[in-house]
Image 1 (spheres, rainbow, N blue to C red):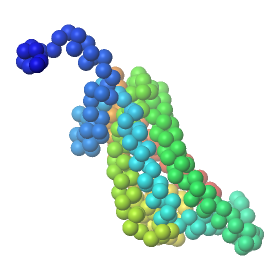
Image 2: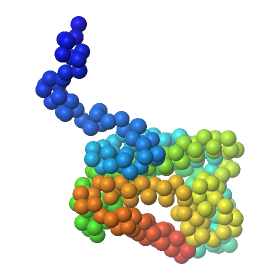
Image 3: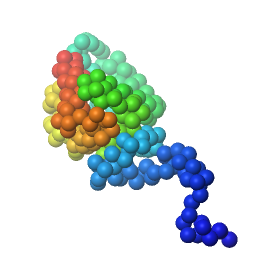
Image 4: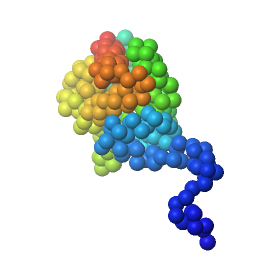
Length: 265
C-alpha cells in the first residue's frame, strides 16, 4: 500500500529533487513537440528554445531518410540522370569527343555506385547538412544580430523545424513506391517543388531555381526564423529574424543557380 500522502498527491523534497535531475528528453514528449511545431509553431518552438534537445528529432529525421533513400535508389532513372550530366558538362569532354562505349561504361559504373552506396551517402549527407545548417544559422544570428544563442539551442530549433521535411520524406517513400523502377526524374521528385512542373528541356539553372522554391523547404525556413527569434535572449525583431534566415537561404540559392548556369550541373 502507498502512503496516504502519496495517494493525496504529496511529493517529498527528495522526489522533487529527483524530478529536477531527470534529463530534459525524459521530462518532455519530443515526438508530440514535433507535431506541435506543425500546428502550433510559436508556442512549441518557445518550449523547445527553453529546453533544447536535438537528439530525438535529429535521429527521427535520419531514420526517415533511410526508407526515402531506398525508394530513390530504385525508382530514379539514374542512367538518364548521368547521361544528361555528361551531355551538359561543358568543361569536360562533349558527347562527340567521348566514344559511345566509354560513356556507356562511365554511366554504368556511376549507376552501380548509387545502387551500392546510395543509401549510406544520402543519410550521411543529410546528417552533415543539418549540422552545417545549424552552424551557419548560429554564426549568422550571433555575428549579425548579437543574439547570444548557444549552438546546441540553434541545432535543437533546426532539428524540430525539419518537421515539414519529415512529412515530405514520408510522402516520398509512400508515393514513389507505386512508381515503376527507374521511372522518376531526380530533379522532379516532389510536386511541392516548382521544378516538378518544368519541361524536361528546361535549363539546368532554371531547374535548380525551381527546386529551391519548394513549399516544404520554405515552410521549414519559416519555422527556423520563428524558433530562432524565440531562442534569442535579446529577442530580435521578426523582420530581422526572417531577414537573417532567408538572407542566408538566398545566398545558397544564388550559389546553386550560378553553379548550374556556369557548368550545367
